Image (cartoon, rainbow, N blue to C red; front, side, top):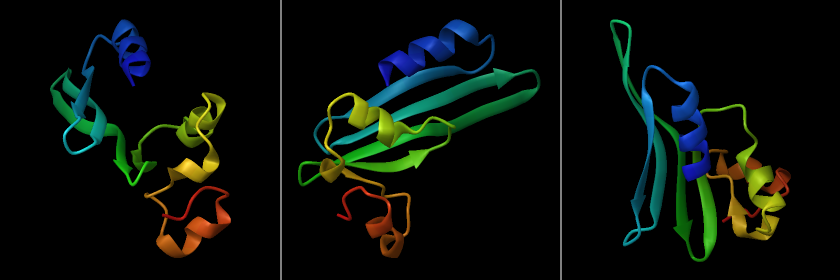
Length: 98
């Protein structure tokens, strides 16, 4: 997420990206916050949780296939849960169901 934040901030004159990490509770977010013209922007870009040793992708507001990127970085599909998918659909994703 630090890489994404740095790349976004390098190319942005408006809202800035920031990484929020709660290591005690295993919650991790990439946020954008700030002004673009007269509009205030605030929102989650990515949100991950770690539960029972698995990475739960809870939010992805980009066109980046972040679960695929995690696999490319060495995380087994069996350790990734697409929490943003309905539980009934997770078995068809090729990733962990929970």
